[in-house]
Length: 189
Image 1 (cartoon, rainbow, N blue to C red):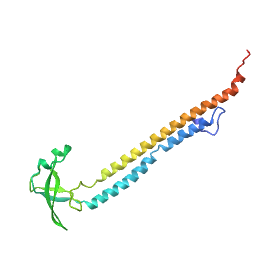
Image 2 (image 1 turned 90 degrees about the vertical axis):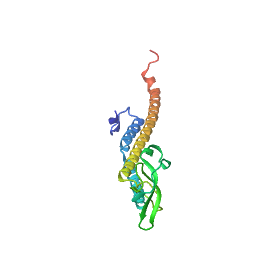
Image 3 (image 1 turned 45 degrees about the vertical axis):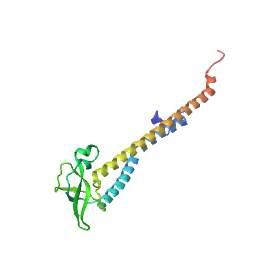
């Protein structure tokens, strides 16, 4: 029936509400193509890539020497407690000389052993910059969320249009039957 509704020829029983419902179904089918997802993926990837580049410019990996034995007093929280603790480390910065900071180090490290830390421009330890895989995951995740949300909104809108169309269709059929019903029924027989 829907293919007939979309054709140029319409039968006498085809109502305006049928045409609106059919074209709404076509619009929903076309618009749920993940255009919103592709655009969102591209936009979020570009933003995340710029943030990662900014992090890479402001952070650098240095080889530092552990000055004290990591203690449980400086232990990291959560599940990292078994794998990493905090200890004072020292490294040489070409511009500012020798620097020390409290940094996250493996729990098994001993004083004098080398570790790698990521200080920012002020010498504070920061996490490593975001890698390319994380940037892609973020972009694709946000794009998928946008495509799914767009599809859900469009399907809910289509459902609302179908309800309104059904209500109008029934009203039209009632009106038409009120006009033609008496001609088909014989009250005196």
